[in-house]
Amino acid sequence: MSGQVRVRFAPAPTGYMHIGNLHTALFNWLFARRQGGAMILRIEDTDELRSTSDALEVIYQGLKWIGLDWDEGPDVGGEYGPYVQSERLDIYQEYLQQLLEAGRAYECFCRPEELEERREVMRARGIPPKYDGRCAQLSEDEREDLRAEGRESCIRFRVKETGTTVIQDIIQGEVCYDNSLIGDPVIIKTSSFPTYHFACVVDDHLMQITHVIRAVEHLPNTQIHIQLQEALGLQTPQYAHLPLVLGEDRSKLSKRHGAVAVTDYQEQGFLPEAMFNFLALLGWSPGDEQEVMARERIVEQFSLAACDKSPSVFDVQKAEWMNGEYMKRMDAEQLAERLLPLLVEEGLMEPQPSAQRWQWLVQVVDLMKERTPLLTTFVTWGRYFFTGDYEYENRARQKWLNREDTPEKLEVLVERLQLLQAWDHPTIEGTVRGLAEELEVSAAKVIHPCRAAVTGTTIGPSLFHLMELLDQDDVVGRLQRTAQLVRAGELAPLPNENE
Image 1: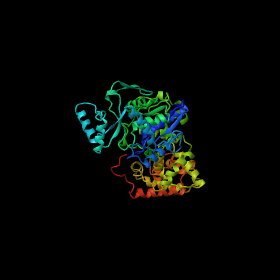
Image 2: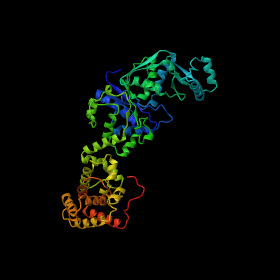
Image 3: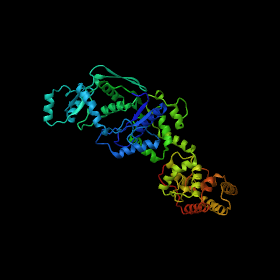
Image 4: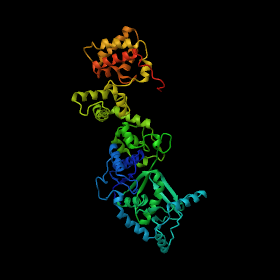
């Protein structure tokens, strides 16, 4: 193998790209970039029945969304291509022939139902189910007879029957497997496609992969891969098996935990920078308490030796908190650029706003970004900035819009606000607080009904600053409308709503 560190992310294009895949890709990328090495993208499409071009496109999109690039791959080329396994079928034949000639591989004619029947017998006897070697000692005449029957055959690899396979894993430490417990695995299917075991061993060798970084679920497979490498006379790369990513109930992350696909998190409004940071800290720590870290610092400090053996929990609330921190720290104009497509999609902004409208949006974003954990929550919570067509929350109805004195307060405010010659937050604040003093009530008893009327909510940024960003006539109209709805009894609390 070359002196340069070479890692690979090798997904199968058989469905959506989930967070566990992205976590593995990220750790490969971090190690490659920290070591000044190469990141290879290889597509393992040996499951020819389930692999699709749509799933492949999802892989590309997910990696690019979080900001990962690769030095070699199907779309960028490289010295060791092709980088799609279905395009490498001829290559595997050479290595298969080597195993057959050495007696380390053989044809198996067992049908799936026969294999399952024999596994059931093993389970009933309390024996770990594995292939029983039925076809391992067939003579050539017996194989000819089975072919004459029309039986299809696959190719199995003959594993060692005694001894121990030892894996020296960078993260998991030394792991030993008893060879007698391993059944001979299929390496070439009846379709002539290689299985994962065979193809990845050959490809890792030919692509000069120095470190195989993958999920701990693959650790049992590694015993087979090491034996294949030995049988073929290939060098064994260094292995590093990453800890599992679990759901909040500490079970394996799955659809029942909610969003799992990378696209789900995109649609929910997570920033890729925040997801990069959050995933990097699942199973790895820089050694201090800092959590919000720039990409450059993560790369600078990353090491496989600092990865944890224990599973990590994908805490959605923690992920949202981190996303909120990134939104707070982001330049308002940059954040507005991220938000504009969502606002356009909701019909709240035009695709190409004028310079004046754009500057207004940047001001709105600057005011709101301290409070919104996701891009989508900005669009939901900040709807009242863009339209008067908003819902009155039940809490606003219960606390402030269901009072007898509310319409009168709002109507007096209408009179005062529509006469203002200056529309800025100090003037607006002076007017609202001045009314409270005249009525001899606390400022809150005017501020909160005003907020509920203008925004439909009970919480949000500074009322006076947000009113400044709304059109004066629009604010007056909202106050008038709300006063009329309250008098008509149309803003009574809604029944059976959980607050």
